[in-house]
Amino acid sequence: MLTLGSLAFASPWLLVALAALPIIWWLLRVTPPAPRRIAFPAIRLLLGLAAREETPARTPLWLILLRVALAMLVIVAAAHPLLNPQTRLASTGPILVIVDDGWAAARDWPARQAALADLLAEAEREDRQVVLLTTAPPATNEPAASLFRHCSPSRGRSIGGPRWRASKRCR
Image: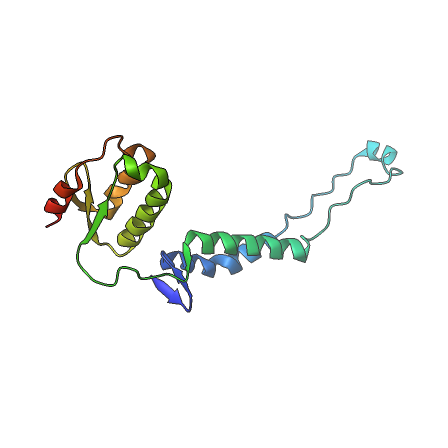
């Protein structure tokens, strides 16, 4: 992860594409060659007509700058910028996450899902193992990426498991 002050990039190698911006500038400034003129006798009928629309010889500078800025923003967005990245996971080694997924947790389940998703995303960025312990099923020891399925709305259970059993598994 590349950090520039309070801004960090999760995929900094994508910023190499910014070096292609001068090539994009050059390609946007190139205009096709002028059409060839061919003498056609019936064209005399059209000589007196006024052209309603004229095509400019060059692309306007403001349009080129807008297109280059848009390309730059797409490249920077693809690098996944993070503002004020927090290192909440200070220690090393596996992380133990205990989730109460019983019926009593259903009231604020979306908030729990969001917190669990944030924690798993941080663990995945740091390539850390996560041990997920819920109050009903047995614990799992899997990589953080495979545990995102536990954030789904269908994971809340109607009947909560005994918490004393979960505390014994935690030891």
